[in-house]
Image 1: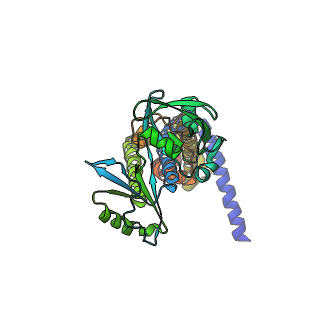
Image 2: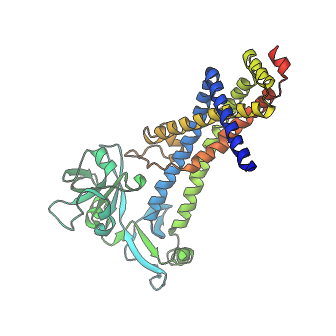
Image 3: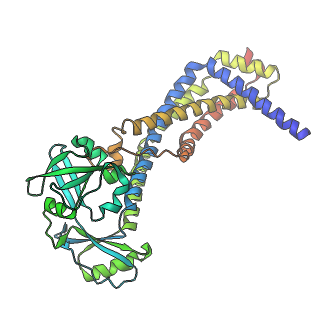
Length: 399
């Protein structure tokens, strides 16, 4: 019973100290508001980096889900060249190789949008893209007019929708008319932002790829762990070929985004340091009224720990308010405005057409990261001034 009553008394004590801290927070509103604004700015910067990095991770993970285990490219003078479509590299007898599929794809510059469109030949339109269609229908094998599927972002940029016809230049610069059979949506904006899917025959015509050749060859394996062994066999069969493993792409993306996010975080460290110095200056300057208030509290029976706890509650209120406001501002900056000025540093390209619309990928872990990076240093900076205020002599403070 005594332990329970002590616990209840402790909670009532902390509640009373919190109410006092909130009252003090309102009385010193101008000073506290300036610290909230500074904390909000710093948190918004760091949260923008976290949100943008997490969204890019979501994008490339969704993209890699549709990537084959191995991609083989023929290299000529250090550049990718067309490869024989019937090339098997002598691995057809490998039990771990499920499928060897030649792929036809490439880029066409479209002057209307001032950028490239990725043309992809779909040999499995019925299975791969059917579930992704937002409007329209699947491709038909043959028709009066060649057909294509486009992503929502590209359709908006070109101003077309299902049923419209689109004139697009081929590799020789001649205009080809395509009917937009459907507009597909996808979980990954990076996967569909600039993609135009059409039949194999139409793609060969647009990209000037001969019948017996392909852009590259994709190998699907039964077990991804066998990729290094199969890649070695492919290199032996086709010396000079570039063999791209999906695991290598994963490592490359991880290192790239982690490195760029870390560099941005380091660049923002001066902002955090300047904010902490501002808080130190504001918190160490005790005014006459504040000293007298602390002296009265200690004279009526408050202990040093009570004054210290009340000051820490006040600092915690500032921290919580700044973190939530900063995180919400960062969310709007990244997902509503597109992170202007910051996106280019992480994307790593000068332009993407059409504009990449990021999928929101907010996580509770972000708040924990912000607490460790910003909130804890802020509370640490406020601890020493709070201790100095709590240890003031009552008689000296009230004089």
